Length: 435
Image (cartoon, rainbow, N blue to C red; front, side):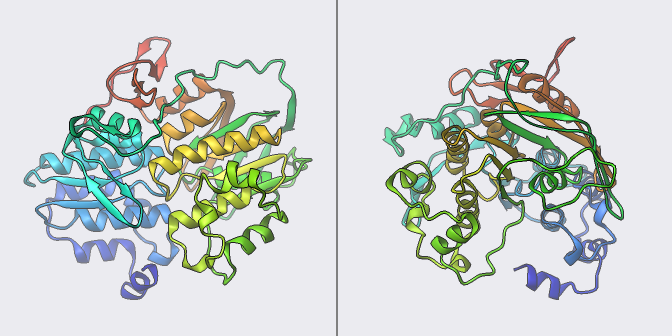
């Protein structure tokens, strides 16, 4: 699909393409699209020069500049950081209500990020059934009821149980203290300089048996830091970092299927691990559905299947540190919950440490013990804050994007109406950002 787009718009910049496809929407809404999706930053680039997140923003722009009676947008949050997801939700809201001279118009969004789904939605309809066999659509439900019903696996109004397992999120904010915890590794000041970007990392400590979450805006150096930790990038001369004295297993942000290998052979090659025992099937392969894909060529897999295979190939390796860059990308809600549980299970089972870069607030909140926050000016410079304890880190992170989430008292998930509040400052709760 990307190859088709690259060929269609060969030699034309992002701005030239958008202007040529514009259906003469109001100038005010056009400007809002450009501002909220930060198209200005990529306006002079060719499509093939854009990253996954930049291509996603371009694709959404191409939809919103068209005149339509309804907009149908499938998984718009893929590759986008939390800040961009919030902006995107606000943009969809503006379009639905009728921005400027534009008429009100419904927007139908398919999304797996529960926090953003809660933030954006007026009503929810659930899809359930048997994957690859059949699907059923529920009647419209209110946002809170719809999401909680999905987590329950039971449609009370229709008396249908579509899943035996009920999902809940832990309500604790990881009150574990770290002052006496065993140290796994420490790093001093780290810098990495590219032609148009530089990263500065302050000294930090990684503790034994913890899951450290990395959050922040795209283009601020999160993946660069991960590659330095994994040994794929050398830091600048003068950096106080000589590598992690441990076995590291790394799942990169961008994954490829340019191989004729079977899934089983791919996992064996990446992990040097031939362990497909009943225990490994139980704790890793079956929960992610990989056992049914062992004999399939990697080139035949869907995006979600490929992501699950890469995650399995990371966690199947016997390692001291598991480093996963955006593990929830391409995955549905149930798979994201499973991934979080499996990462914690494997980490504990191997007495290891995990570092996860994550943009899904709900999954990050449920998974991590502490937070390393990346800030700066995307694409120009990045710096770190922390690592911080979970509550302090999440509050600071949400403060930077000017939004707060409350915990649903029933499921423990983050939502916008009631319960315990993330984002509480010393001066009290912040008000919910209005659309």
